[in-house]
Length: 196
Image (cartoon, rainbow, N blue to C red; front, top):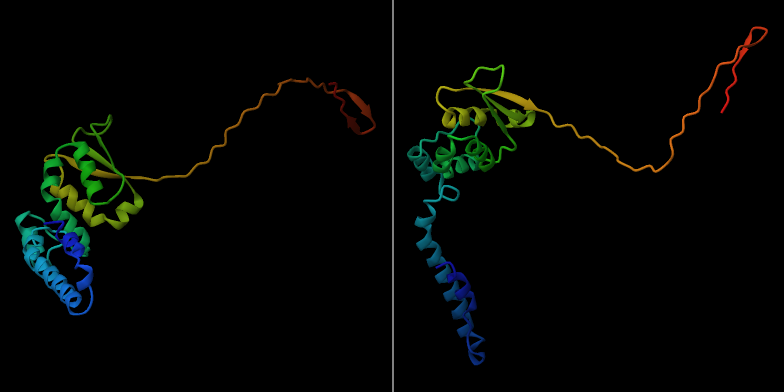
């Protein structure tokens, strides 16, 4: 059925019927069948959380155990509902947790486990300060929903600093000349001389 619209556009009348009432009838039938195609596919599109109606989205969210937090944009809520099963599957590993952040467009994240000098059950989540400022409730919801049981999470802020390094090649000769300090006194003035 995906090529239905292209087939509908490719319908053509013979050259002797391509004007007047037959051409108007073809345009009307294209419009009618395009509408029928949309009516038939509307129920199928309602199972997709990214495109369904909002009341049905809330029902899908309830089914997938996703709750909308205060101030959450509708597009982000749709993504959370759409990826609920995949996120639940990936929640147990470091790579999966990073993939959850990527799916929800949060940005770059690092997870550090079992660091020396820190309790074994602490997982450090490294993000930049704009991610914490923009998505603070979402980060806490992800930790609450997909975080490991019996683990503590703490956030560390990564600050990126741009740095420019210029490299070059110098094929010169390095020569060191020694200079000596002379003891020439002329009144109150001291004169220095150097030999090269």
